[in-house]
Length: 169
Ligand SMILES: CC(C)(COP(=O)(O)OP(=O)(O)OC[C@H]1O[C@@H](n2cnc3c(N)ncnc32)[C@H](O)[C@@H]1OP(=O)(O)O)[C@@H](O)C(=O)NCCC(=O)NCCS
Image 1 (tube, rainbow, N blue to C red):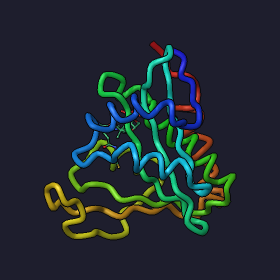
Image 2: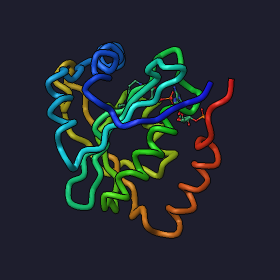
Image 3: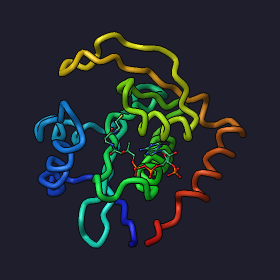
Image 4: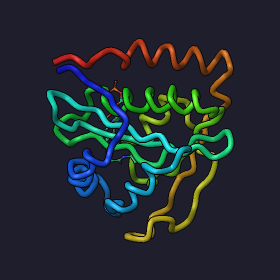
């Protein structure tokens, strides 16, 4: 099924909120998204398949660091490369805005996300105790190396080859 990626707009938020509530234990509110969408340093995108929301993600650029703020794929469309594709787009768009490093926080128990981020060269650089207030779970802090280095360019090329095309099936 063809995957179309667009910037997130206010009109998308009803669907985004539906997935947000299913995907996260502490979902963001619609107002939080509206505020994010207004930030010039933000980059929020959605993926659609046959008109339906399949996933979304966003980064916020702080100096030369792109912070991955959110990433979610519909449960019935997971493990088909959509999360990786969204992340590839976010890296490309963040880099265009001046990002040199990527960083994020992730629940320590979120093995799927940690594995995905590992593929993108994120390494665990620290841990924040009791960061998530719903269950006081720790957050892992992950960072990439400089995304402009030849090594990281090569990794991105490999990832584009693997996940860049529309997903099959
Ligand atoms: C994390 C999430 C966005 C991944 O989306 P996805 O579309 O299923 O991921 P992809 O299919 O692009 O996976 C790419 C790679 O990530 C890794 N990965 C993804 N899901 C995985 C899982 N459940 N177990 C192990 N590895 C996983 C694999 O290496 C995978 O590559 P492969 O399928 O070629 O082996 C999705 O599971 C999700 O929406 N989770 C709920 C919200 C969430 O936790 N977001 C992250 C917040 S920090």
